[in-house]
Length: 199
Image (cartoon, rainbow, N blue to C red; front, side):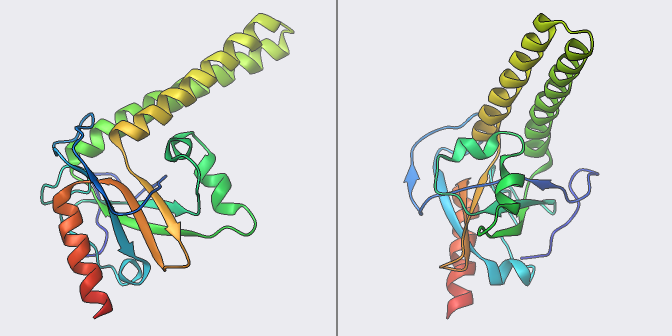
């Protein structure tokens, strides 16, 4: 177990996240090397002490790289958290709590997610540019096209988050964060760490 490190030359970065309860299903997700997708539980106390598994949350391979993600209170569908800005809004929404979580991520997994995330954000900026230009020139068609590009970019990013990233939901009542999906090797270490911290 270790504290958070830098990943593939990138500083620890804030991304979004979500959850459920600990279950396993035989499903192969895009870009993930595991045959079983699992939901894992991490204690906030362990996170604050810098204790977490040392294998990639998605591929299960040993790694010294980690990123920081934001876990938020959310009971709706997890894919909604993949829409740009949703986690930030929930993080600052009155009455809702959030927590910064460190997760180990292999460089290959990071590259797959970061590439798609960058494309989605670039498309959003392009669409926003079309909206601004269309509004300045009073061209309704440009505004409409820009809005459509933004909507498509948000949908692409949400789908990419489901297929190539994780969601982290905060459960303040249990003082824990639920991470989904996770590799079974990560889950085994998370379970061992959880049991050790409460005994």
